[in-house]
Length: 117
Ligand SMILES: [Mg+2]
Image (tube, rainbow, N blue to C red):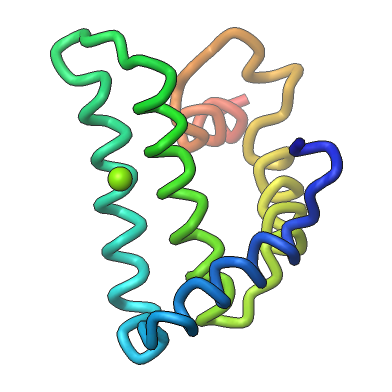
């Protein structure tokens, strides 16, 4: 389904959902960012204490995270695809594959090491 679903259609669906419930008045960037963080926390909660989440619960929380990410995009007018590719380009520079392959250190560690050479 991911292969034939456009992000714009999902954004339209989240907007429709909020509009039909007269919830747009609550969906400002500050509160949506909090809702997104809450849903991300619910996702983490599934794994807390080494629990193994069932697939339905995992799908629910991923859906919630995506829902609020899409709503955040609607509220701010930020194009998610453009933001993704822009950040991806930055990450390519921060984490050159030849330098970081197999390592999990923060990029500042690599930068420090590069400057020391
Ligand atoms: Mg949830």
